[in-house]
Image (cartoon, rainbow, N blue to C red; front, side):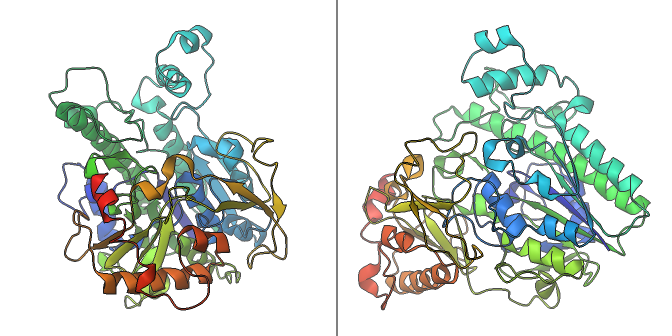
Length: 504
């Protein structure tokens, strides 16, 4: 048995033809849908990039206990479990966050790995004067330098990454017991893309290039917004071409009988929807968390079919372990997706999603409940870790001054972690208020509900799932949810916070 994960970053479900009417030209995603099962109710869990990848490894939620960080010593890693069982695992990626402090333990869980430099201001090429004299923040100055070293599509890091993935597939077409994780940073911002893709999406924009929106409210002109959307569309078309290259190799070597294929992403990206750019600082609307997901599983087959079971990123690890005949460890919360493929059986009653320090969200597939904090302090908030690093830096001395040893959590293998008090910072959900949406009647999440009966039902579901995850008591306190005792209407927040939510 073999398996391929083709993972994109920031791939929008609502801009792919298998899911929506769209301007994006992506024939290979349609081709994929004809060969695989398309999931209609697949959600993210922990966000953004590395928290999602921790879920991919561990099959359990990350964001209730930890922000962006490495794999922990007590984490079960699906690629390492496969490697230790004699299955060769190979990672090919141009995702720069694997190389930073907050991601440095992931790639070494694989048997072999390859990385290709140059994405999103990756500190790659050293051009001193260009860096000193360039405009904008250091990350953007470095990105401008990197682009000069990728002047053609062939030299683009996405192309070089896919070249390496295709090479692995050709080299090992006759081998058995391997996993290839081919992971592309695109279409993550900045939307750096070459011809022939840009000419497919002409627009009337005449100002400076605008392919890297900030994480903020939309204040740009209509033509700038449309230009950015079309640059994103062009990059998705390039991703579609890369997908086609992988499908071509599977056809060429007749891999469909024994090779599982997953095509997925970590989260989406707002391109002006709800008046926002990007992610993280606003509520996690469905454009960000309702994800495209395609699966071909030779155990159950089912090409050109759709499934409506509520599934999540945490389900990928146990599905791959089962595919190779291994038993998922008890700490994995995810379910084998084969159950959904076989008769569209339900996997769960509800799904959690969110970011550490942001809203804690739950969906049952119809309603989405976004629970904000009851106070503007966004606390108490804590990190539970033995690996105190952020995205690109270690925790500072001052951050670690007040840490205390925490009692073991159910998934820490008996280990006590550091419990570090932190502040919510730039993604404080109190500013946005608590929100409730009915996706059946309001799929665009334009009209928040004030429905105490539905809110109470979703709040109780949320509390049940928090307990199932061994969420720290501080999360219950932060969200004003009783840790023990009955949850009643006096614990609801939608009506109390409605004016603030509407104002923002």
